[in-house]
Image (cartoon, rainbow, N blue to C red; front, side, top):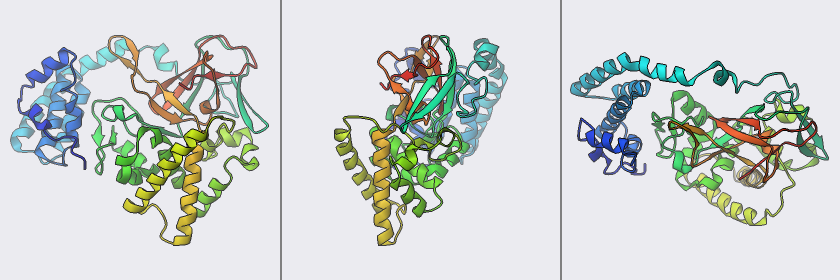
Length: 400
């Protein structure tokens, strides 16, 4: 475990947390962000208990009562001294009495409009995640997403859940590794200091999709390769055998895949993310860099994990399949920037964008003057009309 927490216990010696609270009020968070890093201490250590207690106290200072209670419950599950238990129970009682204030604040910001705006209206048989305003055509193996009728500004066109997402490294202390929820209550993976989750459900789902493998080599996975690598692990878990995995890798970009029907691409097909744009240009520099990355990843997969099969002949075939799928994802699958809105009295976009693979939205044409806008909703995104769109006009968005 990397020592992200070394020396941070000094921030939790003062029970009043007065200095931290004043720093928070001054908006100088360079020191106070440590309250998130401190939960990466050795499990059940004194520093970990102090970290959760401190997070609870800071949350209560700002009337984030549910956050306070969550941290207290997490701390109580550890082997706490009776004095700490008494202190936590007193704090929990105070937070429970003030929960109504947090609920009132939430209700003020909520309305029937905000609650229902991102609900897809109507039924699109071919593309379940889209509204009837969207039509998808496959012409000569290329997917074209167009307006099925005239669309007004601000119309919700689609709400799509990602095949796979990846958090930016700058977001790891505030964004759930699985669902991307922005939260101050994230809990670290038991095996690494790079992935934090909002609850046990997200942790279990992430493990099922491959984090149990990613966890062992996560220290060498940089932002540029995180998304294709996580998608690669999920594709392996979707396959019933290595033979199926190898077979999938062999048809990438072929006519067999390019000529699939739309309902197979965007419906129940578990490999829909692999039906991506194959008309990208200027890929050779990126191909070289990606080759270096996958060689490094395969080396550490073999060195630290049991991911690869033991049989030498089968292992060689699997390594080639891993490289093919990783390169295909890196070169041809468009990573969609997931701009999450954050509220600080006013609505702002988050500075560091998480990314995801989306079978539908990832196939939209790029434009420097797009007619749609993508907004992140945890591990889903909403596609909104940015300007009036005529029937038959191709939908576009900005890749950058």
